[in-house]
Amino acid sequence: MTVLTYGTFDHFHWGHLNLLERARALGNRLVVGVVSDQVCSEKNRTFSTPCEERLAVIKALRCVDEAFVQLELDQKEKDIDRFSARYLVVGDDWKGHPRFEQVRGYHGVEIVYLERTPGISSTLIRQRIKDQTPMQT
Ligand code: CTP
Image (tube, rainbow, N blue to C red):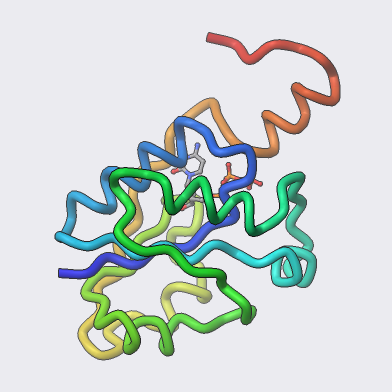
């Protein structure tokens, strides 16, 4: 069973790994869409690392079976069909968001919101680098 998820994955961190490992455990194939630089800009999302580098990190992970660049603002239906995805997974910061809810039930896909790991985000890392303050442990 294929699990599909998306993200920017800038400054790859523990919260990302935690999400991807739990997503993988829902099925037996994890496919990850990495948001392109252009789509990041269109969504007003900040990133520091270019897409090819973010993609290379995701591809190198043991829990990831396949990864691709998300070139369109919304291509979920197309990807659900292309990968025969059974689950569409994302952190619960997206819970109930129309961007995910709109594909609920599309060709049998289930939307799963996984609990977000507290205390870590790419935004926080970028901020700490800027402020030159260490991460709290
Ligand atoms: N995620 C998570 N726990 C965190 C951070 C992210 O579970 N602490 C999940 C998100 O919910 C999403 C995936 O990881 O499903 C990719 O998130 P992304 O937006 O790339 O990471 P963030 O750290 O949230 O980035 P930003 O601070 O730029 O929003």
